[in-house]
Image 1 (tube, rainbow, N blue to C red):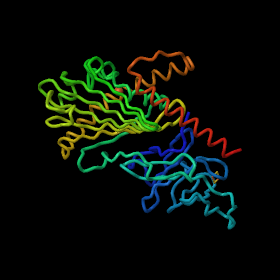
Image 2: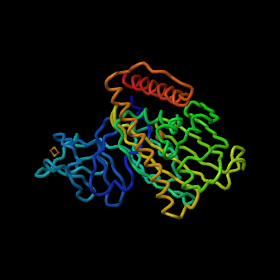
Image 3: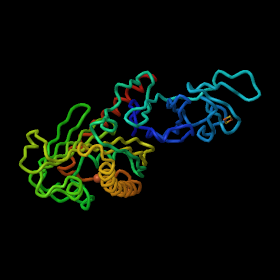
Image 4: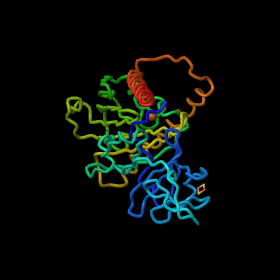
Length: 346
Ligand code: FES
Ligand SMILES: [Fe+2]
């Protein structure tokens, strides 16, 4: 199940340059590159002549030259040159995708071009905001994108999957949890009051006693999860909105389906303390990366089972409330897209 009329992260800004790169998104092979002026461009990765992936070709100025017979395609997808031939046939063009560069990511619109509106790109400003230290990265995931969404909406798993880094049992057993649902948004709020901080928080926050810790998870479709997390010394008023003397972070996640069983996982970590210290940024980033690699191992093991058992029955528990709410939204949006598609084709 893919939702098409959305902006997705296709790549990080540093990945895309003057060497074309291939990437499959929502099952579609795409080639990405930059023009000489630095503008990102995305084509379907298939030559209009005999279907060779254009990512095997090379850039000649602002045109992408196919590796097979040398046809050249301009940034608007039109073929502008055929070796040994003056006439360029009408149909000699490749499909292009709208792309926008924002927050160190290259965003791509996978749906109806008439609906592509860059103001709808999900806000990830923490990744390039001077009030935050931040670093972002990429993981390839051997699992369906919705398994990643489920994971981030149920943080009780931190107590078990990440017990040596960002989790401890207090997270699963002592959290006050609230779930707020809106038509296009789910927010899961978790407060863990007067508990021991997990190992990572001790390392970067220097806490000596118990803390009040929050995890506020904001989900927007199709697969954007922005986590506001942090802790302050217990009893200093964080639940009432007074966040002083502690640490605050944003864990930022944009999942892009590659195929039904694999995903591109773009993520970043921003912090509001010691923001100009690159070592702190790296330390925070590495702690989260270690944890995320633990998640990636879980996702691929789940997917392996799902490949064998094919839609097996499953049991829901209270901690699934956020993930179930998100899946309901996604199912509804998918039905709406399919209905609109059928109407357009009838
Ligand atoms: S297949 Fe691309 S030029 Fe022939
Ligand atoms: Fe995790």
